[in-house]
Image (tube, rainbow, N blue to C red):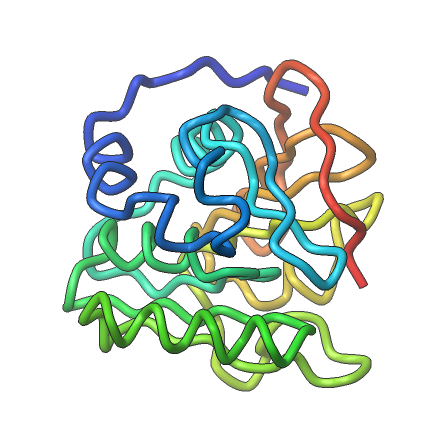
Length: 194
């Protein structure tokens, strides 16, 4: 069980700077955008705190041109950051269970001119977007308590997934068809994976 150490990724810092969090928050929360904490976006959902997103994206190591799945895309903020990381030769597919958030995220991605990124409504009883996979990278922003086999099955060989599980951030790498896990230090709080 290896522990992760921050890489201080300049690519992640540039991508996050290119997507100001304030534009992905409800009007009543925008005054708090610079604070390093999760902020409510309605519908029992939150926009994750920037330091947590940084850790998750550094763990994910998203290359240009990658295909990425963003599970629990919420306001679309992480979807847009991922779109900057993959660039126009890649693709990012967000999936979200709240239809109002799907509509808001889609509107924000259009306004940001990121046509290689999209958000879809999650289907009842289906985790992720198996019909659109497999994916090079998967980011999960909700805690299901464990690593879901259904999401591991949506990774390509050599792919990486980052997700919270029982309050810890887990990196899953698919190596020779089997998931290999390591953990970031610390404890993290996320909304439940539904």
